Length: 378
Image (cartoon, rainbow, N blue to C red):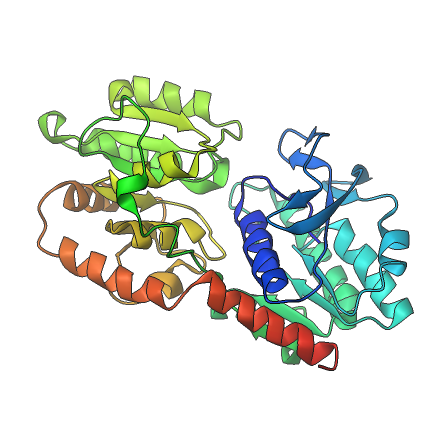
């Protein structure tokens, strides 16, 4: 189960890709999700498809349970539905969410094995001291309740495992990295880019959100010589930051070099935007993993990313440049290397291809299926 499903996002992609493959392997898989489409805007929708990629999906209304300083989404009807589902295993996704506590209550009462994929994210740097303290309290509460009920806690990187061990039972942690669909990225001739893309651009893909470090790369762009400044394309849904970034770009004299594409539903166009880029940028403050890094590797473009969260584990020693978070000068240098003819470009791309071959959704789904069978007794 996941708060949002059939919606943009890394957790959502993980659930969808694993669920459809495990079901295709012959298991009875059902997804429970809320009716929330956009958590930032609290956008609830109707008319969702009842079956996605062959997987039946049951939707529940979501409500806010206000706790001072935090929001705890809960799903009325979920406890009863889980209790009556006949499930051999319950798998809940995300940390600090009400549906995880609801799933744990059912698992404990019914004796059903519970797995939680935490997708753990520490407090953002911009959060105030009080909010950071409240989030830390939530960590401890989940560690003492839901995570003691869970038979397994799935994380994506060794870093996430180390952070989780601070408040959760360490012997229940399993590291299962996510992946990418290499077959989807294997037919470049079939993809068509949207009209009007600039030439030799650098690309960011993801939410246009406050924790993604986007002001840093706009400022870094302004540091580059005006006659050798690559266009910057920002691909993804706006989470309230676009207007501020546009104002920043205008104040620095680079407004014409910054292009916002929004969210692309068309996967062919999405892949074509990646393939057409001179390089990929991920300046985030934190990434539990960073699925877009695997997509950049599959597209065959070199990467510069923040040395933050699980990113160093994903890139390894040679699959891209690691840049200090928020360091505008270092980012300007990295962007110049990607946009230019740096001889290391080929090495970064080749290392990325080798790395991404190890991280596929097929392998990820098979490891999940083995875990389900282990906990369900075969």
